[in-house]
Every structure is written in structure tokens, then in C-alpha cells.
Image 1 (cartoon, one colour):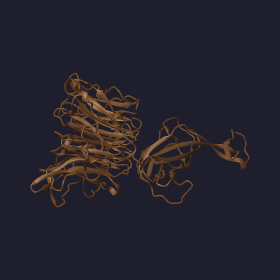
Image 2 (image 1 turned 135 degrees about the vertical axis):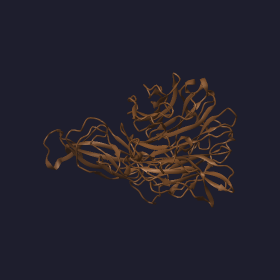
Image 3 (image 1 turned 45 degrees about the horizontal axis):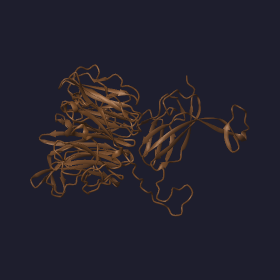
Image 4 (image 1 turned 180 degrees about the vertical axis):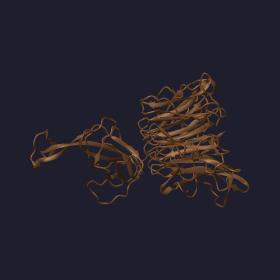
Length: 619
């Protein structure tokens, strides 16, 4: 990660700054000035679909709203809790490829909140009628939600001091473990202990590329101690709830762990399926407890050795706080934290072999107050670190810094000073060719929700080892070969036709009908062609048009079926629910078809592979 250690001074506009698009999504209005509404929620899908959720007062009551990014503009926010007279808590939003948007929010008087959800099935469709997920007014709060590119995922939520989770599949929401109030649905590590909610100690969830599994990380009290925990979820049945694993670090460089400083967990799962958990871990430095930002890999049963991702000296005099982490489809990683007393923001990156770099200063100047940073990482390998800075009292701003590319050494203003001081923390997400940072600016009548869209340049591909003297179809020396698809297989060569588009599923799903293997994370395109009788003419196969053809001239003439499916996949074997169609539409008629799969990424497009299937006659 190219982060300059040079002091940057004043933030002069850079070439990239001219491309930052700042949009007022809502406001200015005093109805947005809500206590405790220091954060909005934002998400961006791999295809660039995006959504932003927040609260706004209507008739003096807090309600949940969502705006979506459509045709390069943020839509007029829509209220998703229509019909509810009681106040809504902070909504959580997530977006899948194609614009499918899910929002989950609590609603009700304090301590009596119910839990609701609403779904927009694609970019241009309206939100459906809200769903009452839990009829019991049991004090639901603090939702965290994540979706895979195919729209499936999980969310966590608190009920009192108990942590619970739901799985999202299509328009179906299923409680993990057991329906409330069943105790098998409580995900606390120890019964009777308190799973801590809120921004500092609340749970976070991250799903894998298929949405079939998820990793959750949270903080729990054990007597007077705080412990960071993680679980892997592979479904909703009790047997699919992995064990809670303690991430506590006993010692670090000979310093004993201090149990009152283990919290602030963040979690991310990359396209390679590996989960990383970052958190603050406390240690005794000569009688003073200092928090360090550490990260550990998690496979569902155990943690890897802790790695320090802050840049504190060997004898630190301040703590690192609020480590936040993001990984992408290629398994790259980006993390940020800030210093407790001097408030500088530091960033670290994930290198080869699972090794994280030591934190480098990403902010500049002397900050007067704390401002938790947020990070997002694009599929191209470059990410955005967004942070709150206040170098002049009362003039807080939101600034951003790219983790690579020609403008990595430049802080870019994300907030607009004309809107007034920025407020508190930011939320950042990335997908497609850009990152989006969402935040509040102003106060009282001037309060507004702002979204800053930052283009993400593509990172240069790592050169592949060249072989001197090679020619023909070999890539040029120093170029990376395109990804390849192998082992394209159908479980049955005769399919019952479906109207549905292909969908990524797990290796254990009963709905899996197609599988293939790719050598690295890529986008695999599926196309289908109808095979009809043909004849050879001038060295090619042309349609026979129903005419008799001599045996020696017969061939298979292929007619393309309209539509292409694009599936973002990880390295290894992928399983797909496939019924003949590559896009949603009418069932294929009876006949023989060829299925082609082609992998593509920044290095180029690989050779297509082919298999043949038959569609049987419908009843």
C-alpha cells in the first residue's frame, strides 16, 4: 500500500479531487438532527449499485429512510417504515449486484422495539411492504447486515443482552439456531453473560462470496473482563452454528494482556473465503494499560497468531482504537485505526502469505478530537480510508485517502466546507469502480446527509514470471495470464427447464446443478447456445434450414440465446443453481444446448470452456 510518510500540509486540490462527487442526499433540515444519529449506513455492490440508509423525523418522530444510487444520481429518499407511528432505530442496509437492496431496522418505544425488514428486488423496483420479522416487542436493537453479490446474507441483532442472527435468502428471513425466544438462537459465548451492543462493543457480520456462510465478531463481558469472540455460521440449523471462539491475546512481546481493554471488533471475509477479525487488545506497559490494534485470521475453529496493525512505538504512551478492516474478492486487505490521544489515523494492508503491514500515518496535522476512520477496498486492489479531522476548533471535516495509485499521498476533502462542520464518524463502502463515504454535516436547520463518491483507479497487475523465448499464444513477458475455467460439469445432462437466472449456492446445497473451477478470483460469464442441425459450407457450419444434408457434411449449428450471466467467484470450485437460462425469462424449449463459461479479470479474458445439455419436454 503506497502511503507516504511525508507531512502533507494543506490539502491542495489534486487531479483525483476534481473527480470526487459530493451529493446532499437529504436536507438541509432540522429533522435530520437526531441525537445518536452520528452514523448513517451505506453499501456498494460489486457492480456499483449502492444504497444509503438513515433516520429522519416525521411529525417529530424518528423514521427510517433509504436512498439508492441510480443512473449516477442518488434517488429521493423513501420511507421504509410506513404505517408505523412509533420511532425507528438506526437502519442497516446492504446491496447486491443488480441493485437488490435489503434494509433491516428496529421500531418501537425504548425497550419494546420490534424488528422489521424491507426489500427492493432490483435497482428500479420499489421497496416491498415491510416485513415484521419478530412480533414480540422485546427490545430489538443494533442491527448489522451483509449480503453477498447474489443477494443472500446474514444480519446480527441484539435483544437485551443477547446476540441473535437471521439468514436472508431471497425474500425469506430465517432465524439462526431457533426462533425467538428459543435459547438455541442465543449466540452469546456463555449463557448469562452480556453480549455488549453499541458502536464500541457491538457485533459485526461478514458473509462469504456466496452468502451461504458468515463470520460474526462481538464483545462479551466475563465478570469485569471484556472478551472478543467470533463464530462461523454455515446455515440456520443449530448444528450449523459454529462454536464461539475467544480471540483474547494473552501476551504481546512479553507484555501481559489486560482483560478490560478487549473490544472494538471488526470483521471481513474476502473472496478467498478467509475471515479476518480486527479488535483492540489491551496490554500492561509498566503499570499502564495500552490498547493495541491487532488482527487475527479465523477459520471457524481457531485463530491465527495476532498481528499488530498500529504504528505505535515499542514503549507506547497512547492506545490504538477502533480498528476497522476490509478485504476484497482477490483476498487483499486494508485496515485503519486511530490514536487515542493524538487522534492520528493509521492504515495497514494485507500482503502475500497473510502478512499485515505495520500501520502508517494516513492523516496529517494535529487533530483536536477523535474521529473513527472507516475503510473500503475495491476489487481492483485500491481502497479508501475516510476519516474525521479537526485541525481548527469547530471546523470538523471529512477527508479521504486512497490506499494506492497516483493520488495515494494526497488527502482529499470529502465534505464541503460550505455545508458547515462535519459531524462525527463516517461509513464507507466500495464496489465497481468507486467508493462511497456517507456522513452528516451541519446542525439544527443546516443538518444534511452527504455522500461522497470517490473513483478508485485500477491497481497495476502483478507481473507473472516470464519464460524467455516463448511465442505464439503466450502472454508478453511481464504480463499476467488471463484467468481460466476448468472442470465445467453438470450434475445431470438433462435439465428440467427453469425461468430463473443462475445463482451461486454452497457445495452442500441440494439445488446445485452446475460446477466449475477457476484458478483465481474472477468474474465468470455464462452463455447458452441452441444446437440445431447444420451443414458445412466453405469451411464453416451454417444452418441447414430443415433441408436434408449428406452425412459427410452434417455439423452442429449453434444459435445464441439472448442474455449473459456474470458471476463473481473465488479461486477454486464454484457451485451454481442452473436451469438452462442465463437471465430470468421464459423456460427454454425442448432441445439440445451448449453452455459456455469464460473467466475474466483485470488481466484479460480466458478461453471459453463448453459443455452440452438437453432440455426435456415440459409436461
